[in-house]
Length: 162
View 1: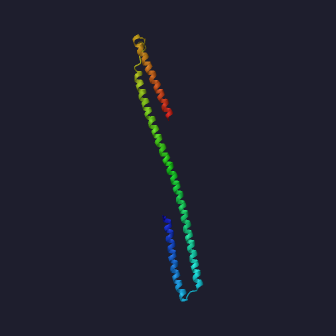
View 2: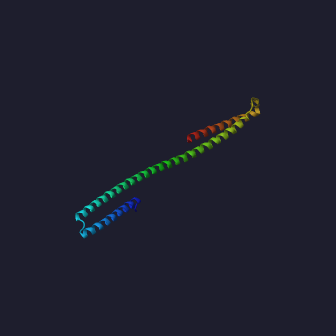
View 3: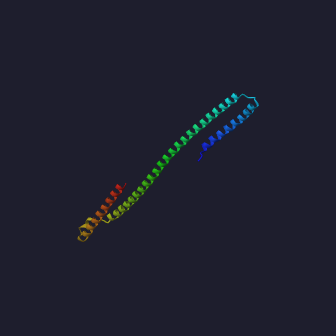
């Protein structure tokens, strides 16, 4: 699979080769006609080849640096994406816990409200002295103690769940 930077390098190399081939054709014609010196043609050819080699080396080195830079950017991006995914998962977990806590608090409020309504029905001291209502007073105290016990248990469970 060819990468875009390789296509650029190949295009550059082919352009230089065609230019060098065109220069060689004119110098070859001049050499065949006897107008040019063979050593001069060879020197020009060597110089063109050295320039070509230097240009290709620069392009390849620059391409390698760009590939390393892109690789570094992709690695950094992948790490940042993982961190964001972890944060998203943690936020979802915390949201679920907060909803659970909120619903527990709401049920506590409702139960407290119910208990406060029941407390308004507490017997007066005169009613407590009546023998017929004594059993009702004990039953009411027992119910009140049970509801308080349930509230304390629920609150401690909700507290340790967080």
